[in-house]
Image (cartoon, rainbow, N blue to C red):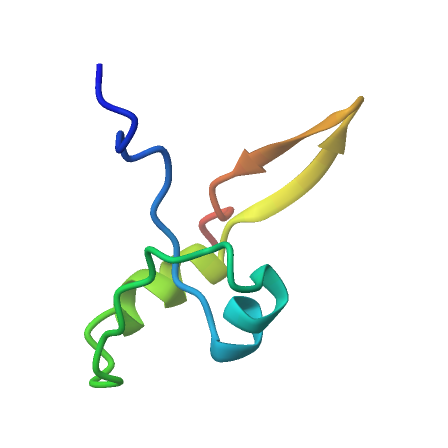
Amino acid sequence: MTDRKIVAIGLLTQADLERLGNSFRDAIPINDDHIFADLLDRLDQIEVEPLGRGIVLMPPVKA
């Protein structure tokens, strides 16, 4: 098993990268061409509810 195994993918802002600091080195910049706009809009519709020590992600209620 390689030590370079991908464990997560995320969309980060410059402020997020600054908060992570110099030890975070594997960021790949993308052009701000709104290619992820539909995905982000759908993710914004997900309801998050606390559940004990974690959370539950619920799909949006269809009207």
